Image 1: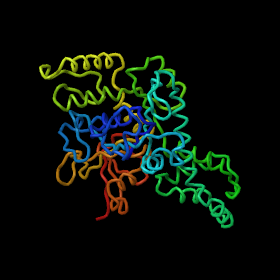
Image 2: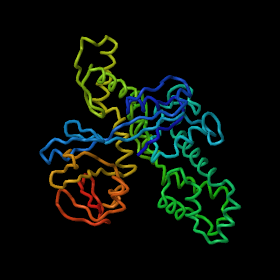
Image 3: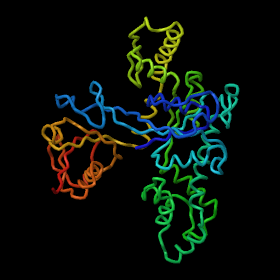
Image 4: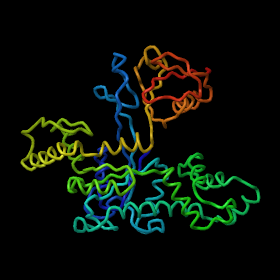
Length: 396
């Protein structure tokens, strides 16, 4: 599962990425600091089932911190996007190619209106953040439409003669972009298109591309630099976008994460407070900075970075967590590890889907599944629920 951290240059994308993952990245106050894509791992939080079991878990793929399970999510930080990137301007071609496999986008915007379209600093409030949302939508739609339109007329005429379903043709053209057949079918169905593909115009392909982006590459907004923006401005921005939006202060989150890593403070990502552990190691400037962050947390509840990632995973993508085990009585694998794995799957996934998630062989040889809480046997089409502990029974 991959989230692409996107946006124009100099809005705090790399700071957001570093704050979420603690991966080392280059951060500077000028455009195109990021050239090559950065990859790192963030985590989303869920209450660990071991608390109800009464025995400590022994995780393999998702650590547990005091009863909070941390499920990994891959983040991708790409070069900043500028207008006409789909034509190759700036680092546009590289930016778009890096995003092929992203399941969703975290669009980092400057909530203060303090950076122009190119990422250059301007006076606060002189640039409309809503314009950045529109321009990124357009760039992504142009990118997808460009892929669809290559030699379209010739292939569309042939497909019409063969009476091939339009969904099949569109899906084949978007191979490698991570769109599912269901997403393509939904987008084609909801777009006003002529039954004959050869009659589709460039405008038709652009509208289809825009619908595909919203279906298959959904977006959440990180209204960054929230420490410099008023509550009123953030509320107004949230109402106007039509997107899920989370105010964030990536700079504050990164400072807290680094201080915690150095043992200076006790802080859990997404927390509403922190405790200073080694005051004698802090400089006067650090003490002042931490006090400023403390006031912000008291007013806002969190820096928003962790919340934004969790909103993207659990609300935008509507994923749930399941815990596959081999012993339904003790909730262990064959080596006796309690609740060894935690997997993110789309809501509505079946027991068979979970089997394939664990291993292809389990899916191919699926017999039945067992709900480890109720001990009830369920079939392949049984929809799993968030937090289910489940055993997959397959042919040996």
